Length: 187
Image (cartoon, rainbow, N blue to C red; front, side, top):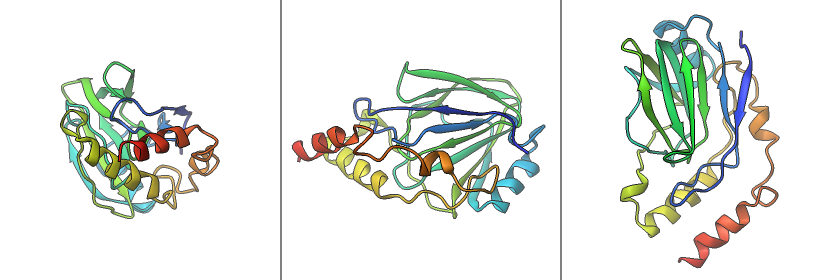
């Protein structure tokens, strides 16, 4: 069902909260891709409110109201993650990215035929936040909301528990208290 799973970690970066949970890339998570196959897998595993589009936004953004999965149904794309210039990865047909809320992402390269299917755990609504337009007050509110989101019940590819997130260090152990203290200090 799923090939190799990559785990990428992040830390706060300016007004990009990123996440204590690792970003997961299921390489070959939906073998061969295909719009219907990717959407069907997501829906079967409870990741709903689906959309399809030739890629994702070309500007850096993050979500504070939901985690997100991105399944490459056709072609390939390069994503810049965790803030401008931090990390670039290439994903191709069949790959699925499981993105924790707060992680900055933008498409910075793609094939002409790229098609992506997105989804959100239990069909949660999503927002679109750009660091460049984020006041200190709005950043604090977004970061606090992100920290309150539940871990999704299932992985969008395997349907099993998201053990990589359940096993992640607590915000205290991961040094996120410094981040939280910084939020409170700017209040």
